[in-house]
Amino acid sequence: METNTAPIPTVSSIEAGLTLLASSLVLATRTDGASYYMLREDCPLHDDLQDVVHSAHNGELPNDWRFGMGYTLAHALLEYSQPSPTPWTLGDFLDVVGEVAELHTDHAHSRVLGWLADNVNRCHFDDVETYASDCSGDDLGQLAIRRQLEEVTLMAYAILSGLDALVAA
Image 1 (cartoon, rainbow, N blue to C red):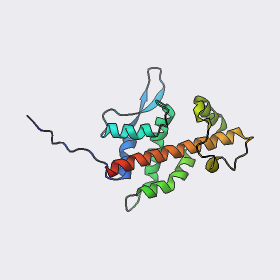
Image 2 (image 1 turned 180 degrees about the vertical axis):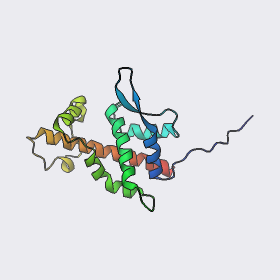
Image 3 (image 1 turned 30 degrees about the vertical axis):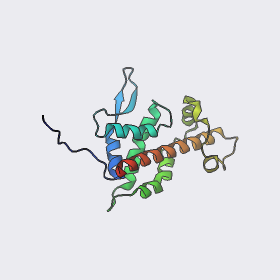
Image 4 (image 1 turned 135 degrees about the vertical axis):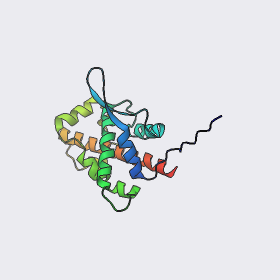
């Protein structure tokens, strides 16, 4: 009987985890021609990365917007960390989450209102004080932008938390 001596893949840092996630989320095309992001079936640590991606979905599975945003966030967070003479820590990444989320939140009212309409469960804030307390209730477009900002921020935190758990494992 032959023993498999292949090394078990590990994640040595958050940055390595983001690199793996960014390269494992790939663009695919449906039979109707629509493009979407998916996690490659043959990627290293597939089940672990799938758990990370699913945690960022906040109960919206399957969801093309979330897979695409996961791809965008992984690349954006990596971009912030490079070049750096030392690997970034979880704290370093957490420090830039707000800025990354702001940059990747849609600021066009028609698109962000369409994002809300795509799933009406997105219409409530988890943290009204942080995201909407200074926003006028008569500006629905601005409220929708703030709601998406909150969701993108929560996704970034979920991805970083999931990758941190893989590093610690």
